[in-house]
Amino acid sequence: MPSKTTEIEIYDKRQKVTTILQVEQLHDNVFRAMENEIFSCRLTLGTEFETRLNKEGKHEIIKITKESDFVTRRFFLTSQFKESECILLGDEIMKQGGFWQVDFGGIMTINLPKTSELSIDGIFKIFDFKPTEIKD
Image (cartoon, rainbow, N blue to C red; front, top):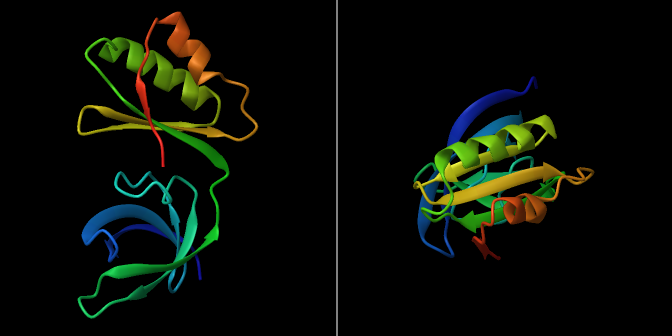
């Protein structure tokens, strides 16, 4: 089956939450995340997973079939970090083959290839920025 990009609704029965995620469909019920799911730290860019459809027609994850090839870190942003600085950081992340996104105007997710030598902590130090990191 040729892969295609689409959006699917994912229901997490543990958290009782439904979200929409941009994915690449690899097989009938196997997908690769094309973005980071904000409410689930296990669904990050590049993660491959298998689902089943529930009675409501929403996808429920059965298992993760392949972990992401990216290191993912999430931070709470404050007004201390200016938009222009965020864009500079994002440009550098993209040059390294990574990805970044900001959700709800205050949660930054950074994905860097596991082989990247870019130090996010070092960049934060240059800007004298001390964000709170969100841990699993």
